Image (cartoon, rainbow, N blue to C red; front, side):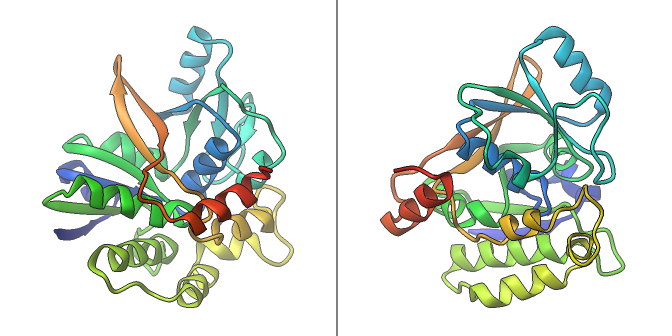
Length: 246
């Protein structure tokens, strides 16, 4: 299995199995929505697309951000902690973010398309192993030069280690994420749009027992949770605890 890395600028050419990584916060938020029993998430690149879908499907909830800030008229921010106490059972969502959903939308050459963050890393790797692809390309959506995006690079490093049998220690991954430029928005006297609880949720490594797969349906990219039978019982127990299940 050959492993490759690209950024948002290069993801359009990535083929084979592509994993779009966004730790802070798109795919931590999406994973949390599925943990709260959401049915599916439509991924879009623009605010306008989100509102167009709302006009067609009034029951869909709009979730997301522009440059990290909530969008006027959206139902929910791009915040995993904002979803923690919600019952999203059978709900369909539309998500627009500045990095994560852009990566999925731009990965037009992918034969199979997954989304990932630290909270679904191991489950995603188990799913990848079951598919036995020739190659895996990680799209590090936050990597934009000048030292940005180490939270996504750290996640890709962790997943690459799981795939090639050289996993990195949790504490090393946590240190890198906490020290990343993106994480600094969530510490200290932070803006209300960047609650510290979001950073803490993003650092719950392997807390969910499902992966996230995007597929095209009627011209839309639809993200769904995929549970793979090889996931360990310990991981399932961690997931149940995070979901607040009995």
